[in-house]
Image (cartoon, rainbow, N blue to C red):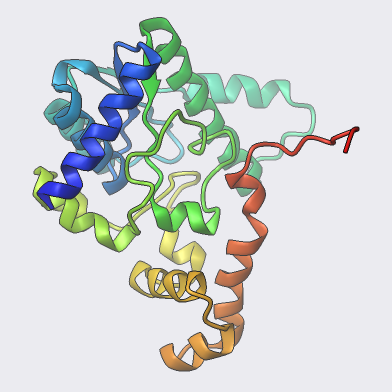
Length: 255
């Protein structure tokens, strides 16, 4: 684990040095991904060069989650700002003629993109890089908001599956209460990743590894004892989300 952490820390240091930045900013949510990311950045750069931004929104945040976010930010960041962007979200919603209350996907993604805007505002203001908090499971599935939580300058934990993060978090001193909680993107009230995806992360990660290794859907479903349609859903998410992991394609006019 020491070797792994040192490699990630070296990566973080090089990213900041090459950009001539003063440090990094991390959106701290109270979940495992942002906690581990903040811990790694703090270890790599020193606490004083880590800026934590906590961005609650009154429809989605729980007090316990906010408490966890504050604890993590206090542990690993030299500067912490907390901004309730609910008024900004409501004002923007009122300005959209076709806005519909309860439209979970567009409304939830709008919140994620507002968080990204705030992160980059502070990054620009203070000469920081935005440290992304996405893990390999989310990236491979495309389970993130394009230009929302997917908007960042680098991804320190992007090569770790979700189930691998607990061990890394324990090594870095992340509180156990955060390591054990159910992952949630926080896009709407009561939102949990495993409920939306239909599987717990141990099964999701097992499927992702199998499909990435070239195993067929029917073989994976049979070996894991799950319905083939459920396995197809995970495989389809992997395949249909390629556009979220790539730069926008250019229409080339010349061969």
